[in-house]
Structure formats: structure tokens, C-alpha cells
Image (cartoon, rainbow, N blue to C red; front, side):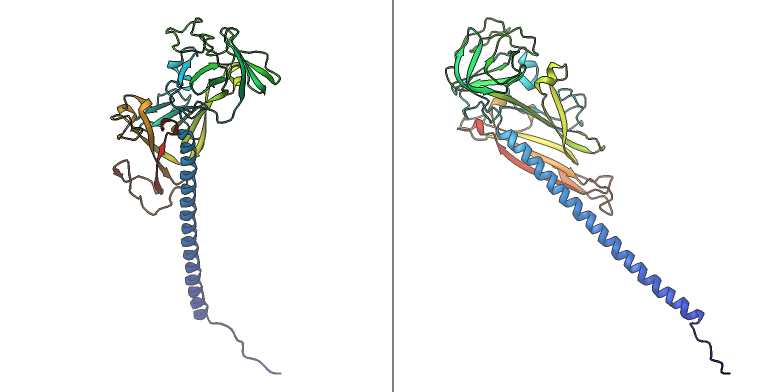
Length: 354
């Protein structure tokens, strides 16, 4: 009977193997952590780039259209026949651009508290799509007949224009559940804010009364008025975000809801600073100087707007240490480990240009 010598690894060999394995696993873990951190950094950079691009696209599109009255001319006279139009930004078409510098958190015009120290802006324009091409207008009866049926509803804020004259009013017709071809601009319909006069001429009496100047639109069009506000506030995920305020629908307003509704647009927008290019010297439709909103004496002389956004990464701990950044002329070292980028653009107000 033969006996074979037992074979195997010694304790020292096992310990050496475990040590080598530990080094290998540690290296793999380090590679994984480094790769994961690189991925998180690139992912956050991509999202910041995307957020900045989207934010600028929205701002640029709306700012370019500020003051648009359906004709692309800034020389048309304007009658605003809405009750107390000067007290509410969303119906004050006489001021299609309004700026707010270093806002306080108590600013309530957007029905949401902005982040203190940021800037805000409001923009009014006519909708780019025709809602009604005018066939005839009876100013005495306060009714406009359209060439085709329309889907306008009672309570909507509308702008009528024939390129030489324009007027803002609220549709007062209550029989508009079906598509029809008539738009009424009468007083006393129970709408909010309602029309102070059925006359659409200039000048509108002050205080505005039902005896306003009559004006007959023999041609032109009626469009919905757009009212848009941009501001910075805290979003649903406790992140600072760019918000967009708009006019609520006519049915929502009729049901007693607020005229302005604000929605979160882009998260991660930490600050917005705005400068206004003013043609304040020679009236040649070019910028003479850029100033903040509180230094503009006449917003109707603003021909371009310079927007600067500070956008941060959505994720924290993207950097190993707090990374300093320069924004609005000041260098700041944050207390968190987020990435930050600045996006800037200068936007021409097309309807202020020749």
C-alpha cells in the first residue's frame, strides 16, 4: 500500500495571496471611485450646459418679442382700456418691459416669493399667431366681426391692432362656448379686471370711464396678449430655480383663481442679474449705456437686455473642495462642493428697432 505525500499551500503562501488580492481589490475600487466621480462631474457639467442653453432660449425668445403689437412697428398709438391697468404688470401694455433689481423676498407680483438679491423681469407682447382677422368693427356696439370663427373666450386679455393704432381690452362676450366670429369689448360684463370704456381710442380718460374715445378698426387683427415674468425662487426639490410667470387661463380666472400663475422652468439657476441697454442720448435706436433696472428712467428707451445667469450643479460633492467662482464682478468661495458656471447673453428688443 502506497502513501502519497499530502500537498497544499502553506499558511505563509495563503497570507501572501490574500495581501496581493487586497491590493488588487483596492486598486479596482479606486479605479471605480475615480471613474464614478469623473462620470458624476461630466454628467453635472452636461446638465448645467443644457440648463443654461434652455434658460437662455426661453429668455431670448420672449424678450425679443417684448412690445410686439401684431405689426412689428413701435410707432402705433396704444389705448389700454383695462381697469387699473397701471397697477398690475400683467395687463399694463403701456410698459411692455419692467425690470426689478435686487428684489426682496416679499415681492408678491408673481404669487411666489423670489430669492432676495436676484433680479426679475416682466415682458408683454401680442401672441404671434392670428386669432382673428378683422372683417368689420362697430365701435358703438363694442363688437368686432372676424373673417372666420375663433376660439377666444370671455375674460381673455386681447390686443387689437391695425399697425397705426392698437388697443388692449378684455373680451366681454359671454356667449362664446362655441366657435363664433364676434369679439365684444364692452364694459360691465363681470370680468376681472374688466374694461373701463368700450371706446378703443387715444387718449383713454384718466380716471378711465365708459365715455372713452371711440375708434373704429376697419382692418387689422386681434391677438391674445402674452404676459411673462422671469424670476429666481426655490423649487420643489429645494433647489434654486428659474421660474416663469404667465397669465392664467380665462376659465381659471373666471373661477376665482389668481390672474398670474408661476411654474418652475429650469432648476439649478442660483442667480439672475440683468442690465438694460438704453438709447438715452441721441435716439438712434442703438445702445448708449447699460444700467440696472433701478437706474432706468424710461423703460420705453430700452433697446437691448443683457442677461447673466449663475447655474450650479444639481448634485452636491461634485468637487473635492469648494471651488471659487466669479459672478457679477465679485469672486466668491462657496461653502459647498458644487460646480458653477456663468451664462451670459445680450438680447435685442426687436420691436424697439427700426
